[in-house]
View: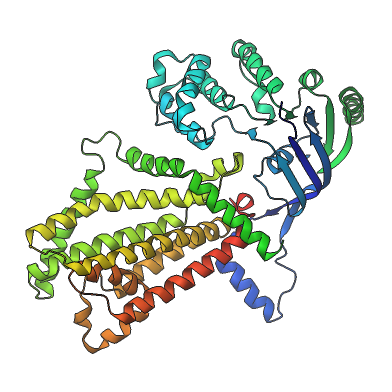
Length: 260
Length: 265
């Protein structure tokens, strides 16, 4: 087995510029700058910034299965996007070694006007699958999605369930060493979920590193060996699954009691 | 982040996109195919509508300008088709990144891929329109001589500039949403002050100022050789200078913007 897949974040901070109304307009910005220079207005056009991640330091090595918990807006998806290389941190450093697949958007690159088969080929191109492996990819996805003759019809006419199956099959066809997964992946109709679960578990077992963001604590308990609890962009707790989750549950419970 | 780091990352973006050329090509080609899906002639509708427009404009303006059709129509066909390429490339540059928002936000993808896609799409449209030029040239027995070889360096400049334009406007328009109408107005004005429909000679002595217009320089280095003249040294100088400025500005802006585009869209 090849070793050395890792994710290493040191002091990573990410802030989102919040553009709203006039800060989206070049004309107004130029006007504001001109006025500001004349001294009539100062500090009025400060940018609003949301600090989505603050000073995150963590290291994941081969074999680790990390779960992310936290309330909505705690920074879970942002952290996944940073690890995936989508958001470049404003401060701090990120080092990633190993092929990476981020399951963030079920409909990634899917074009409703194209047939299922064409979409599979397109998805292969997005993921940089070599030409020789494309037919294998097609077979794998077709077998799992069970679309039958629909495979050669435009995705536009698929039922919602068929679209989900196709999206899921395509996203999980490319087996990476580092797997990042957002919680949507574990939602779906019960019938399909059982099958999807099997496929995901194979994929999870095959990956060197798993990072999973979820609200479903039972899934985190089954799959993860380590949990990071994010709160307002900071690491609130980091430790073995049961320890952190128990504390998390206790606090959630306390909040409900207080609110009630 | 130091300038050297930014340079390295931007260069890596370009190299990664070159490796994904088949994706960019397929996306650009699909854009065209899907736009004309369901029509029997497909993208050749483009060829026909361009042909009809050039025929009509040619008859009208050759009468207005009192020029012979033999002289005017090959010029018009070439100018008008090159201009449509340029104008639609500039307009589509504004949405290079915003149209791919979902992809950019859900996977790591080199930004140059989206530039290549826009370029591919526009080159394919141009390729369909070339048929009109070929027909017009054949009808009027306009055979380009050896000077036509000058279009090779000119085409290289066009491609490099097109990429620079997509990057610059794409990133800029992702940040500032009111650029699109501004660009639209500028291109409208540019169309009228650039000899696309009218011939440069019609300006009389004022022709010496034409190379100041970057659109003229760009058009002329590709157009003149095909009509049997070389572009003048001034025109080439203008084209090279303006291109150098565009590329430099575009690259410097991309160095700063690359890490921010995902946040902007």
